[in-house]
Image (cartoon, rainbow, N blue to C red; front, side, top):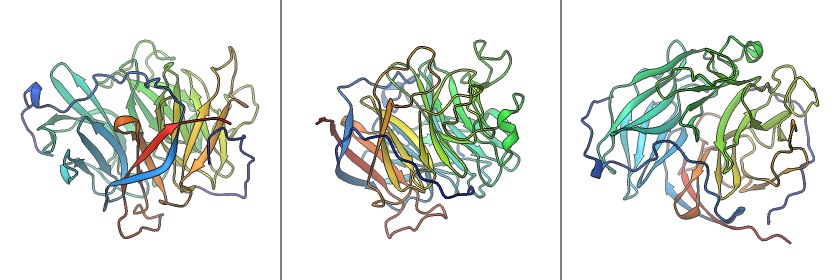
Length: 385
């Protein structure tokens, strides 16, 4: 993974309590899913984990991404290239094997996303091929409990790959554009190279074209100066957040704005350098190794791998006009520390719950008899005081 140095941090005071083709099915049989994601629901949040949990699936093989599609859920397996379906009845079955996946180190089949266009549903996947990292999409067929994926077509390609720092999270924003986190692939200088796609968060259309309103004409780059971002989400105000692996000192939560430079490799963490944007929050590297990121009821939830915990994060106020950071505004608390092992991804579950997948079978964890697992977490409104 990355080098680790001795580091410690005093966290802000917590405010929380302790490949086959198929014809498309008729519309009535298709799995439900948004055409483009709306901003996160406002709900009545904030919320916190009650400690109650339910194991939904066991025996997962190095899972990387959760994609809920109405009554069914898709899970990506990093090393086998499989997309597995958790059916409405709770069974786990193979929906497809994504062609061209060349796993190695941290590379393989990584993030998943979904989009509907007219009468067609598409599943998008970020994968490591034998030449590069890329995003492909596949038509979704079948019905819940028997989903299938058609032939893959390339959306965007040409990201350098490596045994680590591949990034890999993809998601459609409230604007209907596809956002892609791309790591520096071990070449730190690429993060500051405006002509390189590595070390960036990218924004493209659903077919891989560059939107006309991107920060730089003709460039897919949305933000730069990233080391290995692996989580993105949007809040109810449409603001974009990203989680990022640091190196020896700080892991980061960043508020992403178009064209901003987040400093890697010149700075790491909150450096106060006017040339770069400081993270909204930072953790010592043994507390986090952040991956998936999501929002439920105005509350950010972040998966931690090396930290082996779920971080629950609150943003107390809106960003002040002209502010380059959120110091003193964002607070964070840890839950399930050491209880389930490494956590790779988080996603909103049904009825106001949170879903997470463990990642103890990826070669860096200590798997138990049932690992890896998909777990549902019960949430409750926060009561302060």
